[in-house]
Length: 297
Image (cartoon, rainbow, N blue to C red; front, side, top):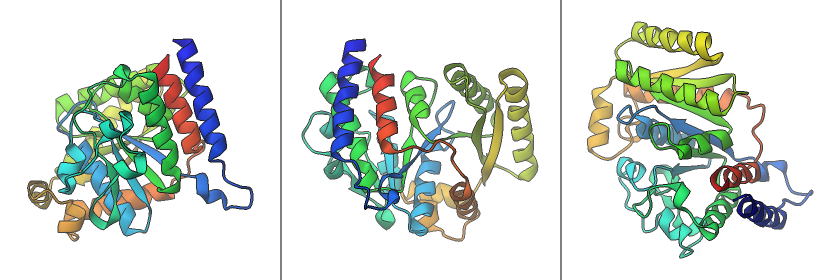
């Protein structure tokens, strides 16, 4: 397995060398910021958060690509109301390059559909891993932000994307089971990444600010005490009938109802996130090299 990993790393080093930006070009040519959006359980609004965050970034003129990393499902395309011609399976099978597989959604927001061709990254062959990582590398020319909508839960694939990303945002709700599962996810992240000190938290479907604070203090308290990790409250999304209506109409609430309360909160979270400094942002080259190491050993 180590020989396999070394072969893939060498392949990506060659690819990285081929796409290295000339010294005369602006440094911004290799600065895509990768954000992993994760949750301890399904049904907490993780994919909805990822899509509306992307829409808010597009409204500010940022180039955004969403990767629906819950391979085997199609949450992002449903929420955006767009039927893609290609999915990640077409990339893995060598039928199309990443650029062709991307689908353009509302406001020019691009996404890669998770499709239904596979269920686990651990099942990938050498050539499929190479195609996937090569495809990620190509995204640097297309995006300022890459949002990874991970699979809910504690799978190895989730951990792999979190390890490789620049930022990680945990989404939960005030539901006791969601809080418990969010803590389990945070515990798993800390176990596999002992060096991590801070994670971003978003609380969805909150009734009011008091409930938001209560959930935050509960989660942050146990995470700080037992795991030595601090949770930073990135923001909250209130329970909003407009958001429910938007989901049913398969349109982002940020577009369908621009003045809705939930839309305002998505806008605030987006602005806050864009102001944050990332100490070890790195580049897509670093991201894919980490993915190779995680998916191959």
